[in-house]
Image (cartoon, rainbow, N blue to C red; front, side, top):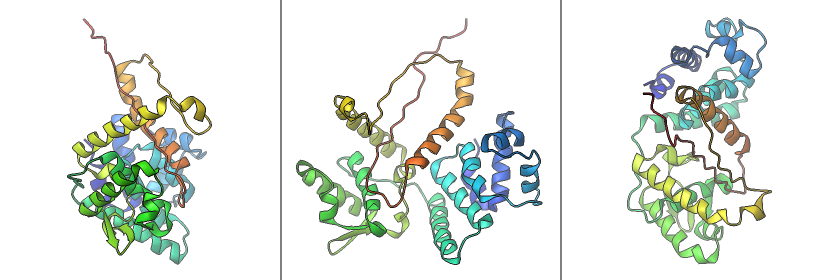
Length: 280
């Protein structure tokens, strides 16, 4: 198994990118410099080779698409993008300082142990609340501002969820103002750093929530997508294609995601084999 996190943490960004591309090619022969160039719109066949040899500078407009092609886990992808931007992009001092802080925070999270969220009553709600502060300036809001995001019948459970986040050290409360603990200040995707049990419980909760929206999705077609399909596939080709599917999904998510923002969007995806015919 490729330890992408260790490679990104221990190498310069260009070396990490070159190494990850080489490792990906070792398990997928199609993943050549030529293939990458075509996918991200580079006309020169020698460009990437010269970048990795230190003869040319990587154009910052190619950073996001080339990293997305690697289909890394989201925290790893965001860290690599940040490190590459710091190395090759033409940033103002203020932009570089802000990005450096974000990169340092991301590095700390990858090096640290997994976040274990314990003794929560509704982990799906807790995850929603953990992201909701990003709707407010500088990730800070009063308890009342957060509670008022929800319908009145949910105010009590929201109060409990906020208490769970404070108890687990993810949020801190100063007077009536809630903010993120320093180590979670950029944790828009906190779910990806939690334990496998936390993730499983959260996924179950998110699917249960989605069921509650099925009956009325027809009336909300302008702002929702509900789709389920069953296709046939060659199992080997399916497994080979999963990396590209993940990359495409992350690209879609990145296109939608924004900051500042005024809306939380549920982004659920389930893709899995149902039946495999065994060869006799």
